[in-house]
Length: 439
Image (cartoon, rainbow, N blue to C red; front, side, top):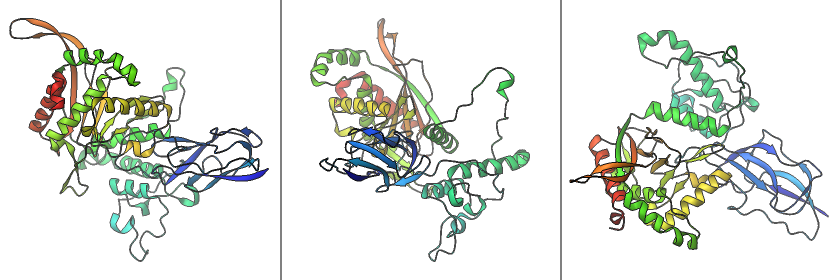
């Protein structure tokens, strides 16, 4: 028998992750691919499977620990003849996304009870948040890159924030608490200064009946924070239209037998993603992102489409890369693969990065329409509701046509109403007559 050390495999883009679950107990027998521990990043959860068969001797980490690639996590007792290999990069890390971002945030430690932060005016970020060349400024501030980025975005000087993490480390909850405290202290002056956002009054719901207080998962909290940030920062405008997809649906249903032979089912989403990709090529204003300095925009030469997926753990937005270069069958295969991975918690960080535009489809659920929130720094998002058979005037009479309601939300800093009208007109054209998709 031999003792082998299992280490954290390649995380697919994440620098550090939290240990949220130890799947076994010392002495348990374990087979190849059995889960050893469960890790969580800012946007995903992942199982680390055993690379070999044996018996768990002990864990080298505890729940709540933060680990990085290469860190030892467990000791296994295996037979001397057993093959032990380090997990490959693509296999062990099974990841579930939250909200598509251009960069995957670095994971910080799990939050612990936060002390009441010191309330002070936001300090000069250049001198307080970022260390200087000689390390004199900010050298004694213990915070990770994602926390520093969050502080810069909110205009918070880290020197004014009390860290509640291990060894006084500043975590994201500390920034949130600091901002909430600052807003609360300024609430009395809002009418005069116009600064701050009034807090929603606390309500004791237990006075009205039985309640349960359930802790949000990290993914749910990050999704909520991302939606709130996007709503506050992006001046939203929503453009509505309907597309006649009668012919598209007839053609799609005719592909059922071929889809079964290919092992791929084509859904309307595949056509919509292709239509979005074509519209982005024809309307590059929607394939831009505003530069953080506010003086420039970044024009993208690639076309990656984010696809919102409803999962038990929260909203996931995997990205279909180079959608403009793919045919409908390729896109359909990507849609099925990414949706399955999202629901099974097997997406990797790179599966959720690099989106240019997003699609949120409620067609399988229902509804006449909704106004989706732009997933900044993207410029737009298309919301699709359930198609309905409606009477449409053809010039001589009304005839039944299958109409797809759509809502295009966009960032008015980058996109004007005329741009949105042309973009949506192209989407309608591509979906109403799919022959345009091959031109």
